[in-house]
Amino acid sequence: MTDSETPWEPPLAGTEAEHLIGALERLRATFRWKCDDLDAVGLDTRIGASALTLGGLLKHLARAEDEMFTAKFSGSPPSAPWDTVDWRADPDWDFTSAAADSPAALYRLWDTTIDRSRSKLNAALANGGLDQLVHLSWPDGRHLSLRRLLCDLIEEYGRHTGHADLLRESVDGRVGEDPPPGWRPRSR
Image 1 (cartoon, helix red, strand yellow):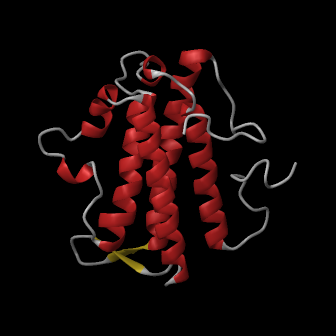
Image 2 (cartoon, helix red, strand yellow; image 1 turned 180 degrees about the horizontal axis):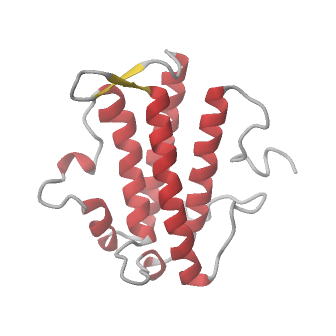
């Protein structure tokens, strides 16, 4: 198996940054595979008492990525569509509004946000590395590092990739830990 068949696979032996990015990329790829190639009904499927859907998770993780690499990293305002939402009125807007979005719009939002995040992360690593302090700080004034932001994003993906695994299995039976070798998103 070549790296081009499984580009999401973390390095066997790399630097700390390579391993953190590798873990994030593997989770991103697995999450995207779990959500891939579904229609509106598949993206809006719920299980049990949960209100979670794959469409809602796509939109939520796009928001998490954007917040991580704008407001939390540099203090920049969030990108559209997050910049116009009244989060106090509807703190779960990313989850609840997804049902009104087309599959193409949800996939495009997640894919373009991820491309932007990768670009910002690569630039940040080139200009200060994992130890650099970011805009986000605790009430006592201590700032978080880029390393902490990456770990938080990995945690967010770990939690929601598990949710996506259950949701996708209920839609069409798709199961598995990683995308199959050679997989590429079909719904771009």
